[in-house]
Length: 531
Image (cartoon, rainbow, N blue to C red; front, top):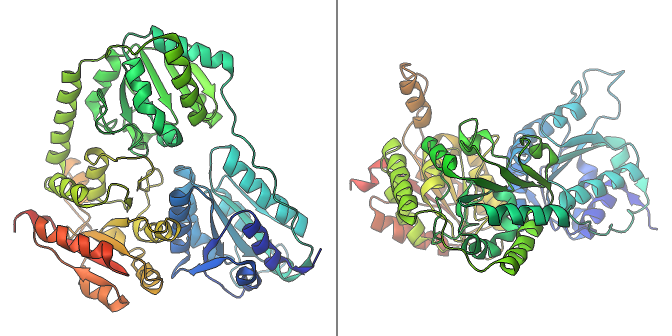
């Protein structure tokens, strides 16, 4: 085996495991990691900030289904990346961060980039964080990360390599391991689930993001069972919008607890039903639940009468889609279609009333964008409305920082998504405040000539926080900040810009932006409907 510096061997190992792109920033501590990137045939994307590199790796992973990889330096470089790693953890995104670390910290103080415990710091936002102290340990940890990405709930990992070790000569990595299978629900449990579903008079399905890979059987499954359905925000597109008895991605509407109270069986597939899915403690059901999840910790939330199934959601969905028609013909609808339509109309009106003026813009944008466009949104009122009223035609098309809820996600994640989804339209949606967390990544989009419309929703303030203060009877404070001229700022980076003053003008600007070779910032303000 040819010996090379370990940093070089790591890049070759990643290439052999299907990695073609790495996001990062070189520094004096991790420079050895960069010796082998080009030699291995990997493209490196230079972010303007380590936070941007982490979000790009996240966006790339969501667009491609492959792990996103980030190279960052010791200390502050890793700390800046911890926000994206925390987001990837909460949203089940396979991101691998490989950082440098100091060779010795117990007996030395005052070193460049020194932390008290870098490994432990990263462990607070990753599934695990370990220091590799030999080439063989490095290879084993990388393979462990890829094995777990493929076979368990995908969550970020961090591996740190001492500076001297990264430059030391090492033998090459072993061949890639066979791809493991995800655990599957047993045949006995599968039959029990089918029996419960067929016995139920008013079943209702809830599909989370973990069910996306089995979306092609969902319409048939709902027709065969006569069941109603919801999706979580991350599960949008799993249930086709025109499907009968579909309540939409409206779990956060508090009075839908009344819907679940009518059910005699709830089937939750691929969702932890987290706080940011429901914004209340329970669904509101008083009946048994079938729960299917790859993460056993999610199943610990069950009750004695529930059927808790540890296994891959896709395999379960495909299995019951075969088993159910073998037992019965299609069932009549178990819910009243008029009641479902009435609930959906009421919740849409509530959403529009809570944050006025955004629903019509969402409708207009949906009509003008290609149905297969990838959308990356930030924490902004525009996205909060869109998540409830903008139906997706397929799963895994809208990506949002759901759990950790970080600002600054949309632009760098969309850049990573555009790099990964070659030829697919990609759009970023950000608010005026959150956009400024990572706006410097515009330089990356310009440098790479990425066709990327960036919709900037500018209401001139932290409007969601202002509304929260008003509801809490607090005089609004610290919610207004002076904004720059965003269009001029975009142009200074070399991007195109537009400031449409009507929905018709927005349609024309979006058409141009999708065709433009390079990013385009489209500046929207709430008065667009008044012009």
